[in-house]
Amino acid sequence: MRAQGNLLACFQKTLRQYRLLEPGDSVVVGVSGGPDSVALLDLLRRSEVFPHVAHLHHGARGADADADADFVVALASRWGLPCTVGRADVPALAQREGLAFEEVARRVRYGFLLQTAQEARARSVAVGHHADDQAETVLMHLLRGAGLAGLRGMAPITSFAALAPLLILPDGSPAPRDVDVQLIRPLLQTPRAEIEAYCREQGLETRFDRSNLDTTLFRNRLRHEALPYLAELNPRIAERLCRLAEVARADYALLEQLTEAAWAALIVEQRPETVTLALDGWRAQPLALQRLLLRRAAFHVRPTLRDVDFVHVENAVALAQTGATGAVATLPEGVALRVGYTTLTVSAEEGARLPETRPWLAPGTRLALSLPGETELPGGWTLSATRVEAWDLAAIAANADPFVAWVDAQAVTGGAMLRTRERGERFRPQGLGGAGVRLSDFLINVRFPRAWRDALPLLVAGEEVLWIVGVRLSEAALVRPHTGAVVRLEVRPPATER
Image 1: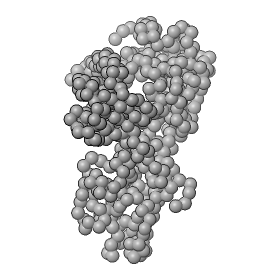
Image 2: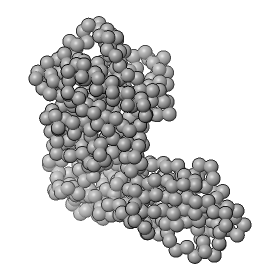
Image 3: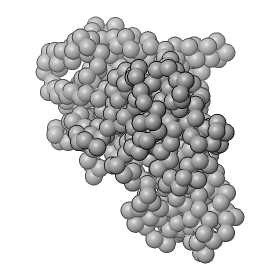
Image 4: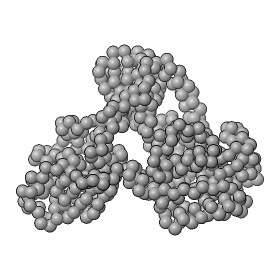
């Protein structure tokens, strides 16, 4: 570890080495109040640039979050720096988007920082990610099955234009996409211990976010459990993971150059929702470039794609390598690959645009069923669940509304939830006498559009799919003459009556 007195010099060397900032530049600094962001702000204000403090209140953590915002405002005032504090209702936005709180918080936070930079006429946003964060990121990506792109971890400098399609502004609107702002991480090579020592040396007061101790969150488990265990096997594990990121980033940069050259040579047509490549030319490429070309085409036609799974890419590559004319492979969010006589086309199908006539969930979403009560779904939809002691079997059998279901109360007692489908699961459709079929086969048989299936809400208890919402009930949930209590479920659209 280098001497603490050298941290400022090393920090300023990093600014020059990666050309992150020039003397006199304005830079928006994301300040949470923790040691990383406070040290970053202090180092920047000593580095011939003009910091503009930005802090987002996420609408969670109650008085602690209020105190964090007050702390940042007071710090900026004491140092004579401009400060912008934003507020977002991240829990409500997470519910609307059907995504985890942490993911939506990240998207809104970066959306807020981008918005602040544009308002402040700053071309750079600085955040306090450090070497330990990088090690956690690389390990997290490794455990989730990332390839070379994921093993790069975080870059010292990133264009906001690449992030913008996923970002959300604090008011819930999409972030602008045509932006000329860069995200910089000047502390990415600095260990957490050095940053904390710098704060002590400089007498910097900081805040502590207790949610960082919550080991139910994946990243926190890596920080507090996985990495300390790995450090027993190799005390320099964090350094090794950071070095892996540097190597992967350099290797991937070369692959990107090769991909760019192949793309230019093979492109036949390129429109916002369609990319057409020369088939023989694509088949002549090395496997690595075949994969990257298909990934690039998928992200071109669907800029909001968070990621494309390895299995999806491998299936598409295998079909494109040997498939006959007319063969089709599917990728997430309704992206389709089609083999032509001489071309390979990747397109965003119109069918992938989810209609507003039914509720949808983002793939991977899990929502606990409120029983009794209302469960809020994305887009303003709600699922009302009412326990009914007196019921009429004939009236239930005559129900013709696909968005109303009467189910045996025992089937949904003890942890029913709404989620999207999982690979290989089965379903016992009403009318088959309890026989089970693959859920995917059932959706094919009822001609449910393929591009919509990953977003279709399922009511599930344990491993049992009880209701494909708006499509079919399971035999396991049916109300029968001997049933005791019954639960009435009704899906309601936003603001209007059905």
